[in-house]
Image 1 (spheres, helix red, strand yellow):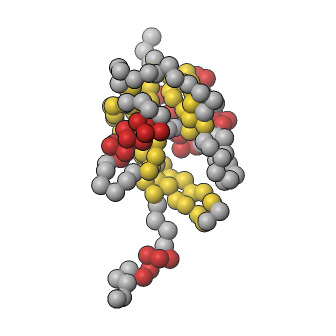
Image 2 (cartoon, rainbow, N blue to C red; image 1 turned 180 degrees about the vertical axis):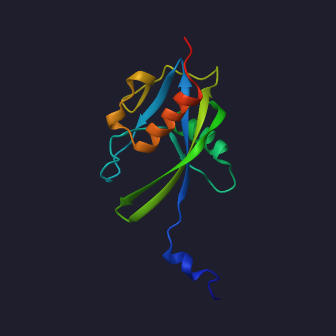
Length: 151
């Protein structure tokens, strides 16, 4: 049987990732990236989230990923009106990521006080900017602009 798309084996497609900008009491939840062997990624603070699976929307993916990875129940309030791209070289080749971010709130019945060495709430004026990836900083800047703190 002939492959209808032989060129696809030579092409790398981007992976869609949904990120959560989880806000609680004007603090944002960040997670420290696990070692991946990729220079520039290991140990960086990152917005939590994950890959969008076949058949789900990015908003559904971010809710699922946060529940599975962190154990928080969240609700999506708004999509940040921008996509960000990044490309990294892993041991098995380059990967191209397209990132969509969502402003989210923690459900009232979730434990928001949980923190660990790899998961921490940061006040907006205390973010570890030198230890964050550029797309995450840009998403957070957009949140500051879209939802200015009053008072």
